[in-house]
Length: 252
Image (cartoon, rainbow, N blue to C red; front, side):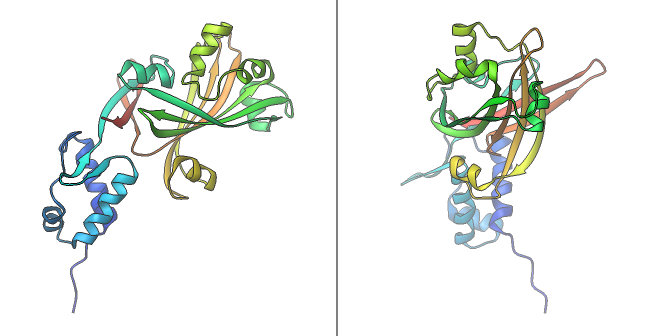
C-alpha cells in the first residue's frame, strides 16, 4: 500500500520565505496561525513550528505572545555600478550599520593574497575579521587582508567603527576608486557558524572583493560571507552592458 508523500518543514520554510520575499506577507504583519498553516500545507502543527523556528533563526520572523509570528524583513536594493561601502549603502536606506572586530592579526601573504594585493608572497599583511550589522542584527562576516602600507592606518581604527571606508577617506585621504567582485555560495565553517550564529555547513553567500585606489594600487583583498536571507543579487542585462545589483533584507 502506497502513502502520499509528506511535506517537510524545510519545504515549508522555503515556500514561506519565498512568499515573504515576494511581499505576500509584509514586514510588521502576522502570518496566518499555526493551525491555518498546518491545514494549508497538510501537516502537523509541530512541522509548522519547526519551519517557523527556522525562519526566526534567520531573522525573518519574531514570535510575539498573543499576536503570533510577525514578519521582520523587507527588501532593499543597491546597484554595484555605484561604488559605495556597506555603511554608506545602509545609511542611504535609513538603516544603522555596525561593525565589530573579532581578530586583527599580522601575517605573511599567501600566494592568493600576494596575487590580489600585488605584493611578493610571504610579504607582511594584516588580516582583520569582523562582523557587520544592520539595525543591530548580524548579517555578514567580513575577512579582509591589508597590504603592509595600510597596516598602520587600519591598526588605529576603533574595533567598533561602523565604516572603515569613511575613516580611511576622512583621516588618511585614501579613497576606494573601484573594486572587483566575485560571487559564489559556500557552506559555513565552524568559525563562520560561531560568529554568525548559524549551524555549521549552513549555506552562505560569499563575495570576494579587491579594492583599488584611483591609481590602481590595491587597498585590500576581502571575503564577505552573508547570511542567505539578508542578501540576493540581481543582474539586469542589456545590449549596452550588464548591471549587477545587490538586494538586501533587513529588519523593519
